[in-house]
Length: 106
Image (cartoon, rainbow, N blue to C red; front, side):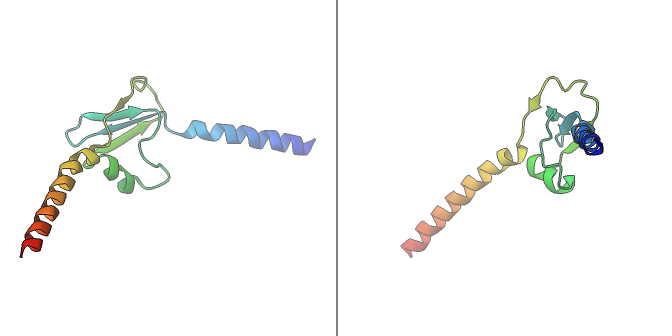
């Protein structure tokens, strides 16, 4: 009987753990505009925020709370970094092609 009570207590505790997570995550871009708002975190919360947040919102900041007020309307304008990098990659490829063409002509 004691084992059943212990198992039920542990099961109840396991169900209570997810309730301790934040209910709303809001990410502000560098211009303080909301770029992400949802009940799911935009980054891996098991890692430090200073490592993960700059990968999805460079120059941004994240706020999270247990209150889900305003989180019903999801906003997702991420990833900002990938959008900003796209022209640079194309420019690099064009430079490589130009360098290969100039190098091959010599």
